[in-house]
Image (cartoon, rainbow, N blue to C red; front, side, top):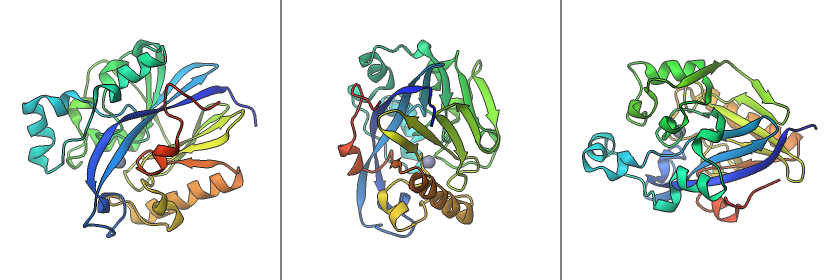
Length: 259
Ligand SMILES: [Zn+2]
């Protein structure tokens, strides 16, 4: 398969401290996990593409903002060390935020759509219904308007499956949120890598087809898990799970990369 992607970097953007049931429906409520938060940078023939933008550390480190966004909402503040900062990680691979021309958001939860203010010049692709939900009145506490309701962002509202370029296919995987999407990347040496987003956080979401803790449509969420498994199976590819604490330890993290 032809591809315009030369490199994939995995950016480790911090850790969330969560009951396991946040990831696996009705399973493991007595356990607290430190789940990694991941974003991905693609080096392509059409420029740099960032998939998800991590957590906004200002909302964690400023006491008043932390109280408003986390403590008061009953969400534990995540752990974001200096080396987890998105700008720091990009800098380590010689990239400035202004160099990123295209941002693809899997969805708009707080751990995937932070730091958007750094990407004012970029095209920001998100599913139309995800965008509408995020800007609507009914979203829950895991949606931080402060991160995305910003003047000057260049929204690109997409619907269903679409192709960013040869080697970067985006597939609709709604269910966890109204317009969740996942990114299928073709690499010359590594082969197919599926950036699942939060269609499933942990390996068991896929091996045992366990629903995510949160979903707006359980039937769609299960269909999305099965769809991603099928894509990986058909292309002999790998599912890349951004939140699995065990799997992340086996990944090549930036500044190393996959080619
Ligand atoms: Zn999510």
